[in-house]
Amino acid sequence: MECLTVVASGVFLVLFGYWYTDRYTEWPLWGLSFPVIVIIIIMIAAAILLGGWVWDRKRKGKDPREKA
Image (cartoon, rainbow, N blue to C red; front, side):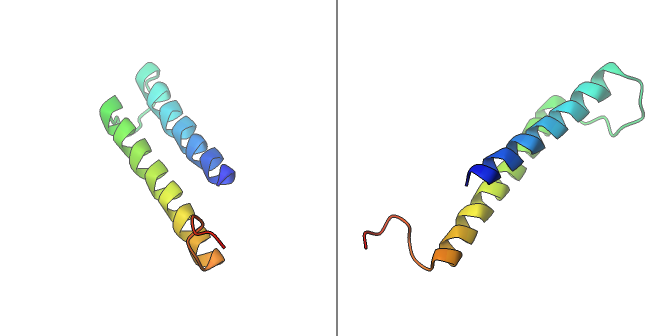
């Protein structure tokens, strides 16, 4: 699960870097507003973490909260 947290952090850095670059340069990028970038970050991070949780449950074959 730690690896997925690093991936979600990477998504944050890439999208925030995109917004920052778009704001302070004249490069012809998409021009997404800050709230849209935040929503995209939240959605992608949630999908990564939820996907990792589902992957772990399928791999282990049982609920990790269950006692053996």
